[in-house]
Length: 198
Image: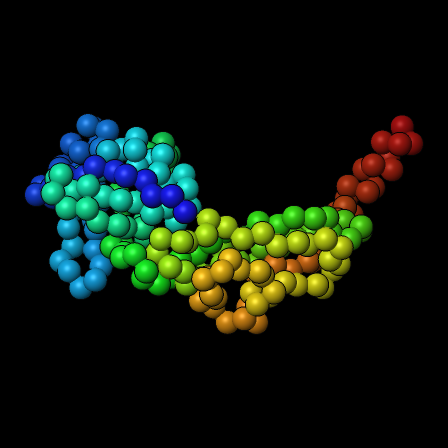
């Protein structure tokens, strides 16, 4: 997993007005917390942060005011619901070698057995514990040949070395549902018959 270096500045202004001013400058207000230290309020460059957050569970190397270098992972990201720009970010302080709890995406490969069955993602992301500087971006699991009623449990998913489950092994992650035949409402069938006769 690669580190993304971002320069940040501490901020002393708070509240909605201050946050709006920060965003107008294409920057994002954020908070860095963890390891029992007081939260540090930051201003981060909007474009750099947006690019970094494209990588799930990205490890961010923060250069704060050119004085201190800290490692952090994103814990909470708030976006504008309409325009999608970043409004605020919470970052958790981490140290090399430290184990952290994160969620990683579950990708599937392969085809279900014939019959129009549906694959349901019960969990879109799998809770795991991993070393802070070696967090996997995702895991891939095969659904080849699965039929209705089959499921994949958390313990069935192969995890990278150094990564362990942070959820019960019997937790259902994926399940295959039988396709439901859609029944046309009674009125529609009659209308279709009349149209055919006309």
